[in-house]
Image 1: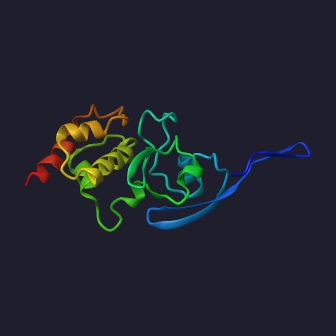
Image 2 (image 1 turned 45 degrees about the vertical axis):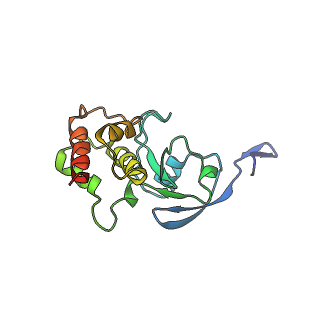
Image 3 (image 1 turned 180 degrees about the vertical axis):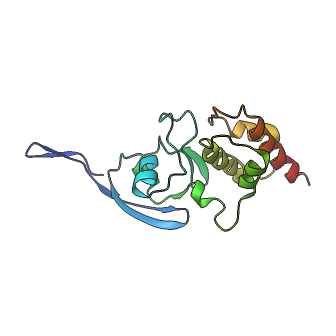
Length: 168
């Protein structure tokens, strides 16, 4: 791994080649290995669905899937993504709208929409792991995702819709 260098009094950032899959597309970038994934996604790759909010891993607005598991991209460094599969909200429902996205639309599971991408990503992570998750398991799966607008009524309707659909 490279390190920061000081050549003739000029600070230089060390950069490494980073290779990972993003939403099914191979990505190769030269970046500082300690750069945050959220900044790479939003600034370098122009995918702004992943939001920046608390920046300390407590709100879930920056949630992505890394090898299928939910992860706060504000706490994930570039070097941790080497060789991994990263999926953002833009990668969910690319062929047709995902059922979780559809439920958010139809049940009014969003207000300002800022937290919605992270909520959807977190629910997808849980359903990937446990396709028959109960209402309580879905609620637990949203631990770490905060919504400041909805009062969670619409979001809980989404979870109920998902569990009702599974039981049909």
